[in-house]
Amino acid sequence: MSNLQILLLNGAVIAFLAMGQTFVLLTGGIDLSTGSNIAMTGVLAAVVMKAGLSWPIAALIAILAGMALGMFNGYFIHHVGLPPFIVTFCTFGVAASIPLIITGANSVSVKDPGFAVIGRGHMLGMPMPIFLVIVAAVILTIILRYTPLGTQIYAVGGNVEASRLAGVNIGRIILTVYAVSGICAAMGGLITASRLMVGYPSAGSGNELFFSIAAAVVGGVSLFGGVGSIPGALLGAILIATVSNGMNVLGVPSYWQPLVIGLIILAGVTLDTYRQKVSISDIFRSPKRDAHAASSLDSVS
Image (cartoon, rainbow, N blue to C red):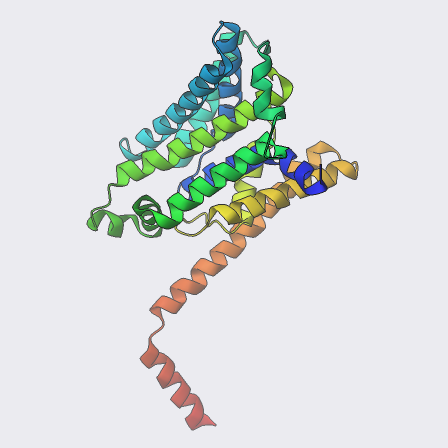
């Protein structure tokens, strides 16, 4: 296995979270529930298999649960009119509590050996998590670049009122992007549980949320909406995984990682804010005003 494959394998969960976060950020929202979604879906899959159902059914149920959590977020954000930060912060707590409640705060071992294929298997000569990331990235990129849905997602992030006047179903778009984020988080939960063959109620409670936002921002996704791409988010995920792995190799204590990632997010947001201000000033700059200023300078000289 090459060094790049090892890096991508370790960053597969971050990549899935970053791709889901990208869809949400493109509409000007944010999803803070992704880390808890990892724990909820991973434990749910383990509990379903413990009840005697096969691992494909357990995986499907987990994915549907992740999607349902995302749609729950989207519903309250659009139809109730609550801010994305508040809604997803609340579901962060709800999703974190569900696996603790249903397991009594205990881990759930997975006995079905077939489940290991998601996190430990191989496909076309590459680790399965990497293969799944590539497949998801291709599908999501096609959606954003070549479908009306993708065009509408960018439009909503660019100007929601103009999109509404143009006939875009804003509610459908918001529900869709948060559902995609939930599905991506569920994939992260399945990969985590499959690699360990255990459903941990505390999974995803580390730096996953920080990493997903940082990867998207570093990859060029604007926190103001309307700008960004899946390939960019993947490159950001690779960079964040590289930074994290590098700090581990150098023996840097783990409690330093949130500080470094936080500074990366701050730098990315600062640059994005500056870019937004520059573009707005360009819009309001009048060609006549520029010509007048140029003629004034010529007369002075």
